[in-house]
Every structure is written in structure tokens, then in C-alpha cells.
Length: 235
Image (cartoon, rainbow, N blue to C red; front, side, top):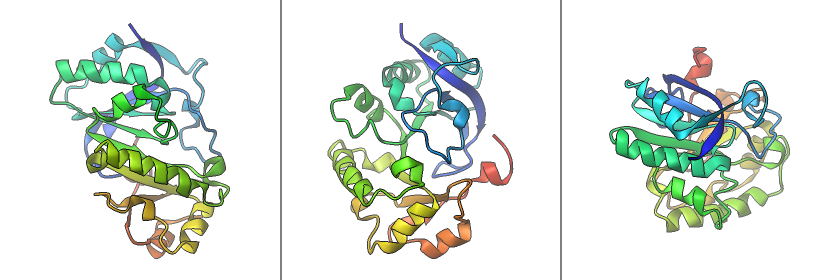
């Protein structure tokens, strides 16, 4: 039976994005392939240490049973696709034991672009909601000269091919460098043409970007999402 390294499991209300207001059980996977300077969950970057625990699928299912009021099970991180096989095993079991539960995940999208990672794609096709939060070089602190465009042109073609666009949302944490890039481009979100859902913009914590500046910046095909959990100080 597979196991995984977990940073924390907790129940709370989703404070942002399209599912704001839903009660969720958050499973925060430990470990990430990036080291973004403005990361708001730095304690989840490492996959070892005193704050990390190893858990089995059965132990995760036991936690699910302890939170019957949670409508959603949400995998976050860190970067959950680094432990995709475990996530897939948990989803398979939940679909059998708690078929009414909805399941979602957020990811930086890096491993989705690796078409050979079938374990990642097995997870994606069985989700009820997927949030992809792409990153510029150095976590958005540095502009990558358009490389972000090229990566996401490939990614979006795969998302469309696999018929995942109905429940997939792209979310950008907007830093100063990201805001500069978006402001200069005539059609910065052209990669999302044909998607059902607009690109979601949120200000990156620790940057100079504010909600007011996002409203001014908003290009075609985007919308701004509040982060209520940070505004009202709940987990």
C-alpha cells in the first residue's frame, strides 16, 4: 500500500477562487519542485523534517471519515502532483467509500506538461475541480521573457485534448513582474482562448500588487478573486 509525506490536514472553508465558501478537508502534501520567494506556505516546501508526517491511504481515509460535514476533499501543497500515485490511490478509495464527496486539487502545472507522467494525468481526469497556478521564473519575481507563454500553449492544448477544460481554472498570483508582463502584452491570456473559465487573478502576498491595481490591470478573459481567508484571518 502506498504512503506519502503530508504537511498537514485540516478542515476549513475555502476562502478564494471559484469554490469560495465551501467547507473542505484540505490535505496539504509536503514537498515542492519550486522555491518561490513569495510562497505563502513555506512550511510545506520540504518533504522531510519534524513538521512532516508519513501517512497511508487508510490513514487519509480515516481523516475523511472524521470530517463528514466537509463537502470537498482538496489536495494542495507544496506540490501534490509530486506524489501523484498516492493522490490517485486516495481518490479511487474515496470514490468508492464516499461517492458524494467532491475532490479538487491545485498545482503549479509543471508536471502536467510532462506528457509521460501518466500518474499525473490519471489524477486529473478523476477530479471535480482543478486549479492550475503557473509560475514565472523564480516564482514570479523575475520576468521569463515569454517562456511562460510557450509552456502554457502546450499545456492548454493538452487540457483541451483531454476534455478537462470544463472544470479547470488557471489562477495567477500576480507579483510586480507578472503585472508588468501582463500590462505590456496586447492579449496576455490568449493561451486560454476557447476555455470555459476566465483566468483568475489574485495579488501575491508580499508584492506591491493590490486588489485596486488588479482591477485597473484586468485584461480580457480574466477576473479578480478575493482571498477571504487572508482578509478575515482564518486558516
